[in-house]
Length: 268
Image (cartoon, one colour):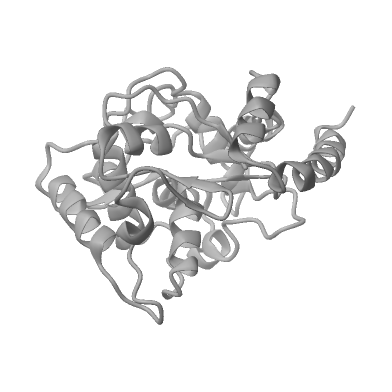
């Protein structure tokens, strides 16, 4: 059976279930997550991501097999767990999305606008190529320790900027990331809000993204999560792979360093 057809069926079924789950408490959702166990619908997106990695694409008709994610050209296993990190070839710190964008442009000949036009799915979509790639690459770090780079000066600067942005209050509601994520035991509607300033909270959050959102039937990336948080703060849209996005992810990754990656996770 075609993977795309299976994904459609899963999206319909999970969408119906999510309506019930979202109307109940977090405990009910935890029971549902435990019941699924390893049967995360993200598996179909992971399969797609692997196919996309090896498929020739773009004006150069090249695959991404020579993409260097930090451990050498073509090395995927363990790469996600060590991101964000500094890359000398671009002289900056990059997260997985920024690095994939670089590889698509350099190796496949795609124009920057083609890559960044629609990196994230809208509700009702079946997922973008970028989301599938990130899901597969993250899966190749499952069980490995979160270990973002912090040896280079720019990596340390990225963490410092991320910390500053985390506490920066702005927008029409005078919100910051810390408004929701600086204290333990807080909730918004039915959603528990982790304290991302602690190792435990940051580790639990960072290690499970990208994740399959059952309420949307889509795999979402950490980059999307950062952008959606900004949207909820009524802040300007966060650009994929931007310095701000990478800095915020660096802040979370460093705070959660040492924990085991379990992504793709399963979220409400």
